[in-house]
Image (cartoon, rainbow, N blue to C red; front, side, top):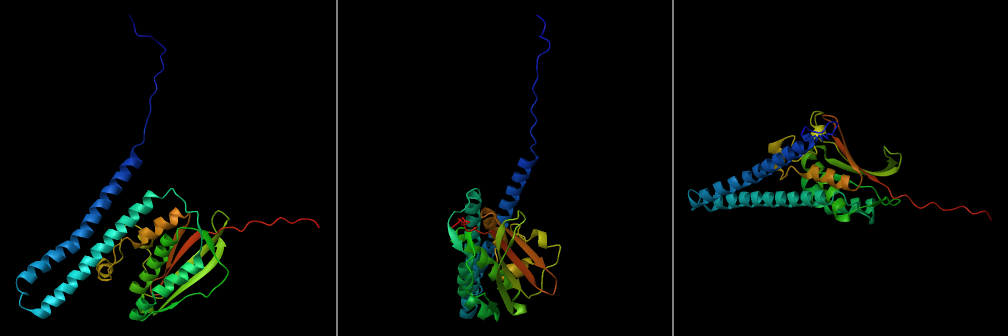
Length: 264
């Protein structure tokens, strides 16, 4: 018989562009991570060959090469640690922390812990004294990681400025709600404007050689961004070449409960 007329045909269209973009990003990430691990591995392999050959009978050269090998191994360990941390944070991205913590106490703890590094670099770290608590909902260890990364970056890449300042303040977020702000300000060489939008990308570096020489993994600011995102916050970066840079973490403040006013 003839085919029935007037039937309904349902066509479904799926835009695969976002999926392809995610796959491309994942492929780029794996390629970049592999490259970052391959570099210190190649250095280690080369030094092992040298120690087995020309440097075998040279104690001074042997000690120097062993020191370089240790630094490369340490860099690999930091890179793997950062990769695992980033993976864990992304896995928990949808889980908002619920515990209340005081940002001021965390910032002062980080500053105290990094005083030795600051002295070694000849940099003074100025930290605000005790003030009214800035209470946010957060994972204490993750927030410590945020401010460690930001202060360490300032000490490593802006030591020429001789001063790093940490500032805590309250403000109003884009949604009109109260937010805590922690600014890490340095007085180093500053960052060119074309680099600013890409600083939180994985493995993006302004100066690859300098970053690796300082032991950087290329993941520090990516970790900062993802941790702040998980906390409902964000990172802003301001810089003028020759005048330093300011990295500011914005986090939602815990609003104190409103007290009811009762008529006497």
